Image: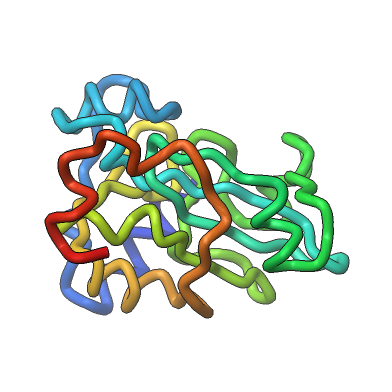
Length: 167
């Protein structure tokens, strides 16, 4: 099970004990927010796409949605999410637990700027009933991300957190 891979990954950083496991599902933003006890926008959802025959992950805030125009400007391709039956084999985690930790070799990770307005966020940890609370610098460090990108819409409007951190 992928959660064990994620825990093993965090064990080398002495952080495995920070992985949260729930008795309820955290497979969607709404369910994860309820399980964690936070606002849905602080859930760091990890979306999987195919770019030039290679899988990528984009971690975005829970209230953000991919903006096709921004995505195309960033990747020079139309957004093409992985099919549900491809996700686990290409990424290493099943839908509901996809995260940027302990992924398969060759998977590139990007962080969307929609996350930067929070001090901490909650990404999944490889299963549909797990999460970990990470600061943004921790998210950068442990996700193995390639770069910050801006490919989302639907966040920031009327969000009291947006201006707090000068983003």
